[in-house]
Image (tube, rainbow, N blue to C red; front, side, top):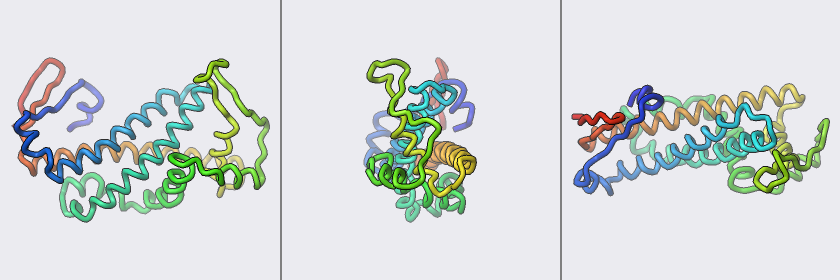
Length: 230
């Protein structure tokens, strides 16, 4: 699928019921559907981040920070699935051209080992109390200690700011000065965005490959124009 299809004119690809019945339990099709679940979650959380990226209100900051943490957790699980699929799909061109192009990159491996694993286990799916204790037991100084802020005093407009500040500090704890921490945070966010996009695109490449292997006939709808793909 081209970039214009992903970013421009709305479209959808469909298969007939008899085609679906033929492939529904095929392991390759099931593997695609598993990847697709993670791709959808990454796309959702990336959109949640971008929707509030310029919003400096308490709610905006909360949305950006929490979408980032949960995106790391989802990415950890998705890459764990990709690791398992490599044994089967590594020789396939659609895997080489997608996931195989970047998952073995040293920079990505470093990102996984330094950030993704710890964030998933301690901040995303498990709110490990050691994150709080370890941060507060060390040199932790702020210009202002904001316990809570909000766009208003209504529940969903509240932001428990200090807990989030502690998590941010824990994430870049190995970087000394505030300037170094800001640089590390910026690098982290850029890499996270890059890897999230690559995961979604690689899932698309994977789908294209297995559909060809399974000889599936597709119907494509662009707006009101219906065409059949041979």
